[in-house]
Image (cartoon, rainbow, N blue to C red):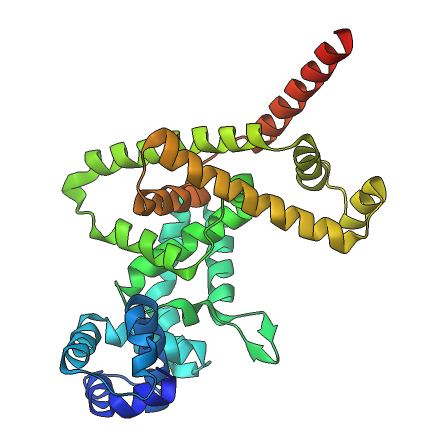
Length: 319
């Protein structure tokens, strides 16, 4: 089902959802319909099947979509859409209502007032969108689906940005999809404070299993892959410098690094399922947690691998 089909088939439902929002800012019905479409397509993927391309919905599908709309945090979604479009009034409201909240989250994570301010500023910059694609500003707000509160989603965004900035682990075990952020947000938000002990136990299980899976992943890498990572991340060599060492173009080195990152993630996922009996949801949650807050010495894993390779080479030479 295309966006246009979606709008035509659910015009009344979309208008009704938007009309119930207290502050629409300058969000048009088309803007809001696009956000609902993106959200529904993400979580109700079966509605994009071929028989629905003409926009004809069965009663059951219409009922499911209507119920889905009601389950969303429409006020938060409208604010996110307005901010993504650069609505000044929406941004003023967001800054007033969420600035101290984001700073408090950042302070909890960094334990340092100055670092917390920097992390909060970085979060606002990502939400506003400093990067452009084809002249269009890319705001992180575009990834908010309305499932779960905006506060819970923002907390997960801060976690992710902190990981990207401060954790070497995040370079290797990354959250790949916007859904990973929302899954983490949902996990954080849905746990009542009375379950703190249970949550801590689960998180510790995730951390321990992820650390073990990551160590196994690095042990399974080829010597050249470890050497490539060591050169790039720890010896701080440029792509051009590494290209000269391997006698390849720097673009090739860049592709190699991306390939190794993906290889590590697959190895980690496989190990979590095989060695720790995790199901797919647990794997996603463990990887999200690892990327956000696990402090693992990747350097140590790389050099452990290098030492083993050296020892093996020496034994083979002696024989």
